[in-house]
Image (cartoon, rainbow, N blue to C red; front, side, top):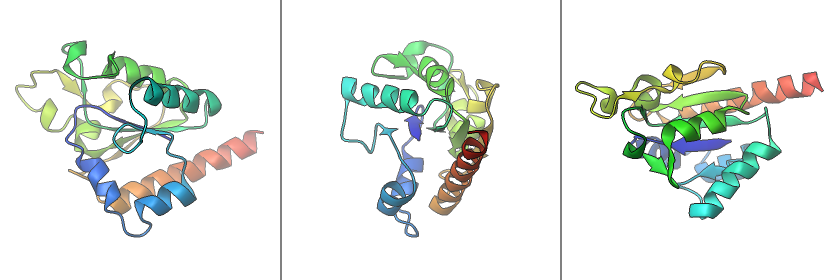
Amino acid sequence: MIWMSFQECTGCTESLTRAHSPTVEGLIFDAISLDYHHTLQAAAGDQAEAARHAAMEENDGGYLVLVDGSIPLGNPGYSTIAGISNVDMLKETVAGAAAVVAIGSCAAFGGIPGADPNPTDAVSVSELVKNKPVVNVPGCPPTAEALIYGILQLQAKIRRETTISR
């Protein structure tokens, strides 16, 4: 799984870190492979981007992209990670993904950044991703249980489909 945070407040990640059944540690060590999350990972800069690219290459067509935060269209410089605009990073990462999870109201619907007067021209994930399934997990932030349940259900579905197709 690759988790990208764009125009957001980190509330969705905070919600996940407060999970208690399973804990975030249990989730990451026992149930999922979270290969990229720039808030939770130790790597930064070039090393972090190398981890994202490695996850995309190793799991082409079989990974989930998790997104929290809206995506600004007004100016690429409004929100960047490692000098890459959110739009470009989203498009690149989603290209080889099986599905996308839009976490929180910002990613699912544009949220506060997308409210009038919307100075960054913020949009939801589904306004940009048209060729992959997008699952919205709304909330500000969503509960950890809703988030974990959604992720695990999609992961199980992807594993079944990958196993059947082989």
